[in-house]
Length: 105
Image (cartoon, rainbow, N blue to C red; front, side):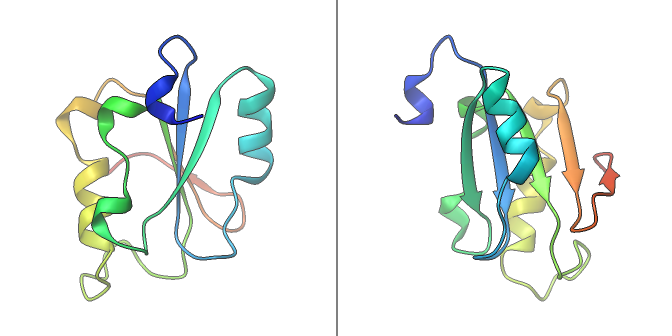
């Protein structure tokens, strides 16, 4: 199933940053609650990120790279996605590798 095919099922998009990242227990819980869960690798290429029209909630997983490191190619497109004005009313969660969460900044 593609995320675009889920017209009535709420969708949560997980942004991952390397081959070891997984939605983990957050993804499992979202699926248990009836969400369609999709993962996107921000580090692959800018066009690999989801369109804001394809999800109802965004979860940005942590990374070894700093969100402030403008030298990392995928940071800019991810920051642009998270800063989309259309997301201002969306639930958002950021999580690092030790379970800390952060508000959108």
